[in-house]
Length: 402
Image (cartoon, rainbow, N blue to C red):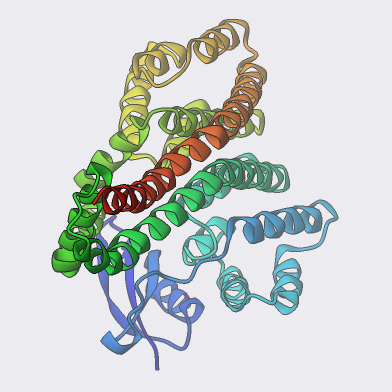
């Protein structure tokens, strides 16, 4: 029988954790409820042979479609249990189908929708669970599901745009480096014996490439090993809280690319906050949820400080401006919205403005990057070609003179 790690709250508020056997997550949820324990988290406990580097998760687009379908069912008056049963049967994704069936079992046992969703982080990430919990407080589950779907769609679309803008230059530069490395390490050294047989003095570019090729041939494996070790250590450090914050800081400082990522994070934050405020969620709860939804650790730290200032009665616009993470136009719109009572509209307007600004920056980046990549690749390949041609021409001249 499978084993699960669990954490649950006792009636006196104490958190109890442990490992238990159960046929499924939903079954363990029922067992804990029968013991007057409120489940907080339940995750499968895997043996060493079952260990996976990354847990199986449902993609953002699949979750987006699920939220839209659930919203349609609820709006049509169909009970949530029946909706989950239909969707789990129709699902072609095993992770989603299993999670929906487990959620249905938990709901039958008396759990709330957000509680059932929290048991399946592979389907509903933590911030989505918080959004659903807030929706239950307002009774607007169908509206919030639609807004969550819109948020996921915008997030996926923004990520697609940024990746598309970066894909072309990365692929072309990598191909140029691979071709150049092959020429320098394997092709050019083949000519070295030919060059030496003429006892001719080689041009400086040729000597540079020959030296580079010889050194890479001698120490290439050591260099590759060092790079692998450094990459592994960097990956492990980036999994720690301090390492993640340092990585996120460095990403935001990358010229041009960091600026685009910065705008994308602010746009998603404002759009989700606008959706929750318009759905009737109180502002402190909405800010807490949107802060949890932010993946960048630096942003999350600054937004947590802003929420603490807001809870002290300093409003929203001032603390957000104090973070130094929001553009001037967005700050002014938030200030106007807070002053006029139209915060949700102004948040939506600010998100729309930043979305257009991001699209403009991505298009400009793509336009400028294409000729820049061509120039860089031309310089790399041209230098190699000049080294070969100049060597052949130099040998020809010296032989004729002799």
